[in-house]
Image (cartoon, rainbow, N blue to C red; front, side, top):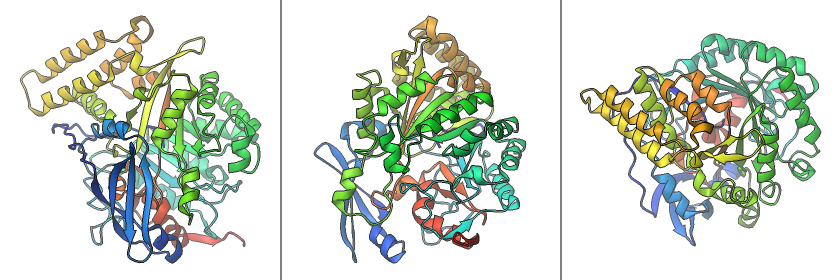
Amino acid sequence: MGFCCLVVEKQNSYLEKHPPKQLPYTTSSICPECLYSLEKVNVIEAFVFEEDGKIWISKSCDRHGYFRDIYWSDATLFRKVMKYWYRSIPLHNPRTVRNRGCPYDCGPCPNHFAQTALGLIDVTNRCNMQCPICFASASNPVIYEPSPEQVLEMLKNLRGNLPGPTAAVQFAGGEPTLSENLIDYVRWSNELGFRHIMVATNGLRFARNPDFLRQLVDVGLKTIYLQFDGVTEKPYLEMRGKDYRDMKDKVLDSARYANLDGVILVPTVAKGVNDDQLGDIIDYAITNRDIVRCINFQPVSITGRIDQNDRDNIRITIPDAIHLIENQTKGGVKVSDWYPVSSMNSVGRALGLLRGEHFFELHSHFACGMATFLFINDDGSYVPITDVIDLDNLLETLEDICNLYADKKTLAGLRSKLKLIGLIRKIKRKSFMKPLISSFLKKGSYSSLRAFMNKVLMLGMMHFQDAWNMDLERAQHCTINYATPDGRIISFCTYNNIHRKTVEERFSTSQLNE
């Protein structure tokens, strides 16, 4: 899940932004009590508003009363990210029809306004750990394990998206390494043309059996998405029930043995558990920069019935984590270095137009995630991307390039390339980073993107929604989607909060306690 890209057809339409929202505004949500106590999805009106410098979401259910939760803890940063929300290009071939509306008709229906950047397939809900904070916890007493034939059809379904096939796939669970068919699934993904193939894992099997990881790499695995909660024993004891630090180190050793240089560390961030060591996690990644390419921090999603005070005690939002990182890195990674994932839409569109071919686009909601990049020196010191290039100027220039093509201006290609050359000339620290960035901007190929990623550490921040803070407008612009055996493709947040249990029960093979 991380910072994912989508290959789409050449587009000649304008790159338009949504107008920034005026606070307060209305959206739709669900009642958490209806969901958890009645197992019923009840869509209700919600309000997003500012109070005390923070953004809140509130809603009322006729049966269960008033709810309020933090939505975004920094109103100033919220206004910044709103500026980078682009009008998206929806799927040309939705799989369901609009009947009752979001989130009932997920599949996606014509009211889903984004394409799939990353497709997820749960290959089993069995796990070799019991973690209380897991999206796919063992609260469902059935075994969900799609057959190889079903998994192949799900892969084909993702590749069948129009106007462009899904480029990245992640096998998840449960613990996907428990599937005896995982090697076949990775091989099939490679053969079907997925450019980026990942496995989301706790790492236990890879730590114990590095040859298994090597087999997966040999058939096309590019990345392991590794559960990684911190650098001390406390978060592991509280979130996993055991200190797994040595095991995580062994996973990295296995990756080196398997010649896999694509590891993403995935800390689930909870207040009072591991929010004091985000900077230390960055240092750990830099120490292992030969194979660690990204840290994707995930503020905890709160599942199940829980009162307001308990939610407040563990709730942490994207801005909370970003401010903590600035403090813990002593300003090495500043709040101002972070941009919403949606801001990269102009990069993909412009490079595709310049090359006259398919390229990457991102269509996510502005509040879904943030990212930045660190350029690492040989001695382990680093500079954020904002110290290397003026990102605001970069994004504005790439927007101009997109709209030159949309206007069908004479010599649009030449004029665009001149703009790009001017942009490259403004890169700071030229001896350090100019060749790398200019190669990516000029070539715009997947190989140049990979070369870029191999020289930086990406920091991502993705806050998946729960029933308490659910904004269905975000879900309608979700780019991280689950494929299911019935031919549907469902947004991450609605799947894990609403649809997972019914899908697993419908396609279960047996009871977990059998």
